[in-house]
Length: 402
Image (cartoon, rainbow, N blue to C red; front, top):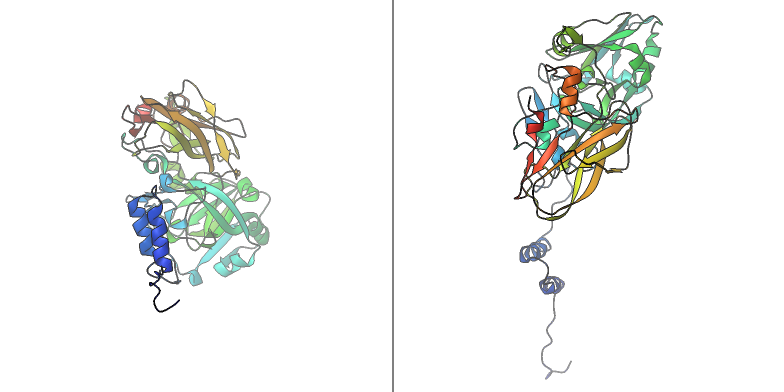
């Protein structure tokens, strides 16, 4: 360039990017400004323990005895360990893993005390399955989140040792038909479990989602009974006793038994969680605009695979099959989705699940007819969301009125 040539304007890389962003008329101004700002300063470096973005704030809803998973905020089927629901009977104990012991005795050849290190020496097994509290239903009010309707269910990749491996190690007797699982919490939670479950798929687990169990979910070790009511998967497991009869413990006689009908019958040892589903989107507090929407939700069954989910947008008058999102695993949450064009006006959206045994999720009326008016546990009715003329989505609590 000669001395007399006019100066040439040079754009820096940041100025060029900023200019390009400004030329994109469709981009909102605030988004353009944010994009420029984030390129002007370095972000943080790696740290020892990462945390969620400040813009992502899922929260459990705690009460004195439980906290519920925010189903409406999650994607996929795995629940982050710190958002897994909790249910306590005596609070969360603090247990030193170096002092942890599990006694296995009763009808066995070699009564044995196992340390956590001993359990970890056995061949490890991992499986993905849901866990659900047997009291997982809250009827609440119309302004109720999916989390509050049935947020006492979560899904984890559990890692541990098969209970059958431990029983073979101690020489379980052929005549043993039940075992007692006892926890180390202040409530000394105890449940009787048929021995067949031990030889089927029961596990003693010490990890969830690749890390140690969270304290509220049984650290350092707990029992896991896939597909069965959560209280039987005793946390902070300290003792297993084999017997030829059930133990009729406090928890399984005063809490987890319930009257059936009007003739004094008692429903007891109702372990398996029946097929269930819930729509998580759209749901309260969403307000819809006319147009296309995707109805999304979760379905699961303690009996095995979910084979079908149906969706209705007219209060159950008509049903259409929804698409199941892979992977669909046995005794596990499965995602479903269904396209819906809302043209305005009132609507009632609902879902119902069918599992591989042919069991179909019942209506509230059918459930109460089968169980009686005083039923408290294993309530898995079809639930709904109502859409008003203004697009506001509310929980269909009227369907669950007594």
